[in-house]
Length: 192
Image 1 (cartoon, one colour):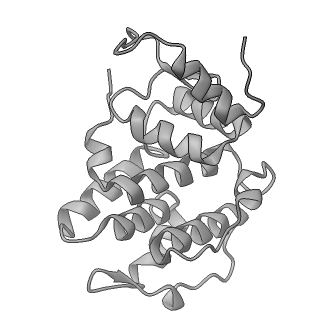
Image 2 (cartoon, rainbow, N blue to C red; image 1 turned 135 degrees about the vertical axis):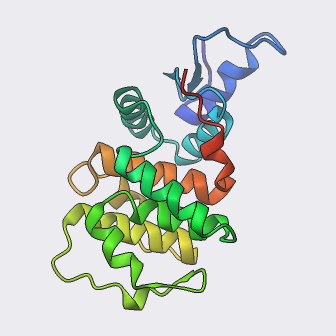
Image 3 (spheres, rainbow, N blue to C red; image 1 turned 90 degrees about the vertical axis):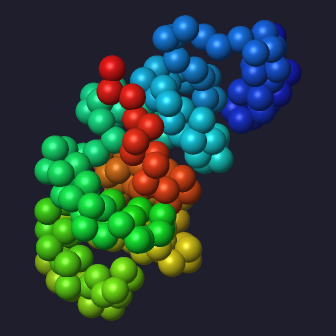
């Protein structure tokens, strides 16, 4: 029986009822009552971010996308481009890499970003937004939010299924993970 009335505090209460130092075996873990079974090595970072969002519906959407894609990236082109970019630009900070991660998720944004990178910084004024898709604009706003730390996109916009479909939300979630934890989060992904 749970006594708390919000999903976040219910999750905390469930944690308090578990056996101390007990680690479940390959069954996953729960955030706000939703089991996240394939976030193994970077599960703490993912759980922390999901708990801060305090939205069961978002947790379910992200979990479903991870199960569907099985990767941190949108597709194999995204992964190749981003890893190549890191190899050629080893001195960027986590917020810079997070913005590049977000931009590189979509081919059109990737091309627009190339003219805006100057000496390891991103000049958002040089990014031409003419003819950009709705998903591209959402990713652009999220990248600008991550990079400048000024909110360019609200939680209501981000969590709205019409403005950000599941893939876009998943990519933005992973971009936030890169911003908070650096590119080491990519090395922690378990591909078993």
